[in-house]
Image 1 (spheres, rainbow, N blue to C red):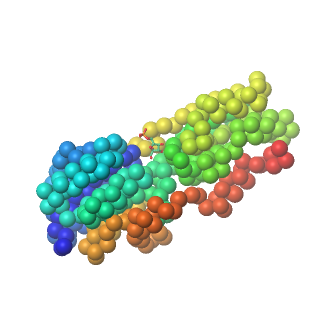
Image 2: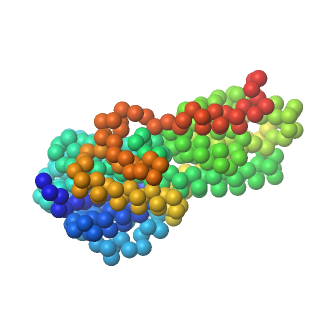
Image 3: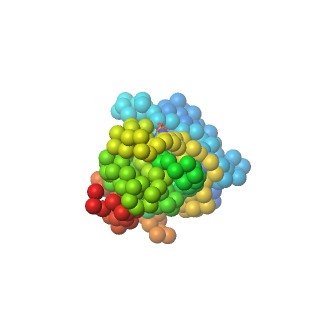
Length: 331
Ligand code: F6P
């Protein structure tokens, strides 16, 4: 079937750069003579038939805006087959030939379900977590790292001034990419993440050692990925080891990591992927995700995408551990 009309949605947790992807999809679609619709509020909006025609006017200037002009949702209804079939009826009734879905793991699983029902879909990796295989970087990751890194550096100033230790909890659900990149680029003392779950007990002992023997300081910044533990529990476990010798403060960065103007790199990745999503649909590619590898667009079918987990490479974990273990290897 020739593709004449496509629709785009953003789904799941929003991520900076989603708007740039929408803009690029709309521009490429219009340049190629396609009709383009936006689906509001992800799968929830699809089930409510909340559709809007998109034009160059509607997307002008949005590449600099955080969030997503289409809105988003985490749809519980769409997890059920009956609602997926209902969504297909809406897609067919609106003469939509293919869908582009921008989102993370859950959203792209939804895209896979729709494609199994017969509607061509292409997924774009839109999540701050960078936890999808089939791409070097996801849309929004760089901005989240930027925000976290700046915050960690500010907290580092306080830790030094007050001679105290801070646990800084960053996002990333089950993945350590944000903790790793933000920790490495902010000069954190410890970086703890699911793929490298250093115990609070080890850190407590190491803090005591650094205080007494090595640097004669209690100042320390521990970057903790939420996938390991929540910051308050982890800090208490460190306190259980260090007692009153060292003050352990906690800072949970939370949603600020998902907002704001996307970095130039995120805008670039989003623009690049949005463009290639449309081009690939027109070349007959479907039912997979478009990712960026080096400066190439790569297509990965959903079944391959979900059979591989995206984890930080061993060399980066080792690099983090050089920091973590500094002076504490013998503990
Ligand atoms: O997947 C993106 C993300 O920000 C994760 O890092 C985080 O664990 C989760 O979303 C938070 O989900 P919610 O927005 O539903 O609270």
